[in-house]
Length: 257
Image (cartoon, rainbow, N blue to C red; front, top):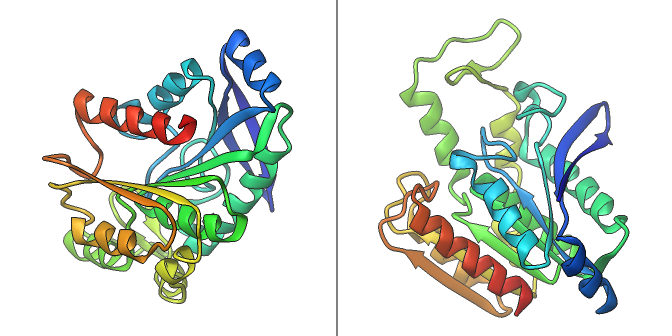
């Protein structure tokens, strides 16, 4: 079962989707003390759906396993309010804090079994939030520790048209002038490695956006129980059914083990 949810953060309404297990699975989970929940954060220029609808498929798979999930569009992305030009990493982290509070207010959730997943730049948000909130587990899909490089290369390789309101056209989206200064003022890895809980990192060996060495650096920085999975031949968005199914299996096992 899934339902549309909304959350007001500042002046923007964030729009998301809450997935809830089937009635029988939910009842069993509640008897056991509550339903586990996964929060999902999308990446740079992404949405709560993502490529080949990987997030809805993941959430529906988790429904069958008795796990709830919650995925929002950050402001300026997808169906949420706001302008992409105003998007910054610190702004997304603040929105993630609000999403966390919203999630813990859901009836029937086991507050001791909340997990966080982030892909690419969403992995930076997920890691920093985990260090603050101490979820039961953290899942990182190709965390973009090289986000500043990605942004610079994006600006250099595309035909840039300066927007009169400030920012650069990166193919239909305006990257605001405040994005890079904000990003350069933060150290996501230094903050994220303060998280001491269980970590699962999954990275494609053929990722052209975030080199695998970046995820390996993140993996080696965590002092808690951490597991690293290299998906041979997978790119940044895990574009095949086989890669999807492997991710779904690993995520489900990580949550319910």
